[in-house]
Image (cartoon, rainbow, N blue to C red; front, side):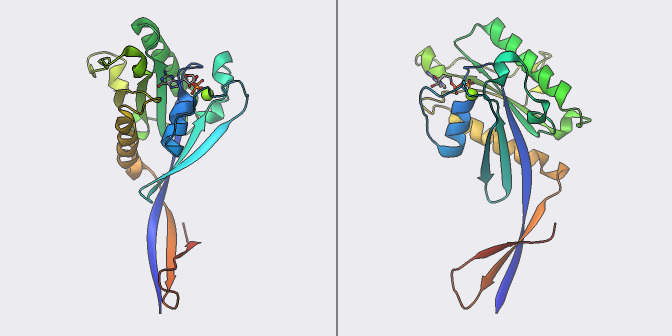
Length: 209
Ligand code: GDP
Ligand code: MG
């Protein structure tokens, strides 16, 4: 006997935006591989691409810029059709500077993701990174829905990529965004085949879409 089961996988695109040195690549590293590698090489020009699977249900393709952000010449393909944008700032910068950066990258995102007709098809997450540099006090990043910027931001999180503090909040925010956007996507259907002669052996074959 052969047991067939189907399950759906949703392909999400996540793009990391923010100035050079704020910790974007470090965030991807911790999110995908669960580790912090100090002294990341930011100088290499080229696309950094990673995939993370969540709950066997979401396949998140993560696009990280590798140097292009410095010259503001990001290739729009990084941004196009993204479902989730993670805008990162570093708390080493002043509040005004952080707000300016968030505004800049949010506008950049919206200008380049023109295939989206409304904000209901994407989520914006803002990360205030490097809170380990602020000592034991976690800077307050409370949502203020009356502020014009905040109405477009789903979640704001202050964390340390270095120590891992609050990183789970970001992980959870990405998961929530996936769940919220699921209904706007067409899933890829996979068929799992389990031959009874080989108990415990699961073979996955690509099924119909
Ligand atoms: P990117 O240019 O935005 O990709 O930034 P990177 O991920 O390359 O990080 C820039 C520098 O900041 C590197 O030296 C990292 O090790 C450091 N860094 C990243 N996250 C943190 C953090 O949470 N705390 C501290 N203290 N340093 C960090
Ligand atoms: Mg980088």
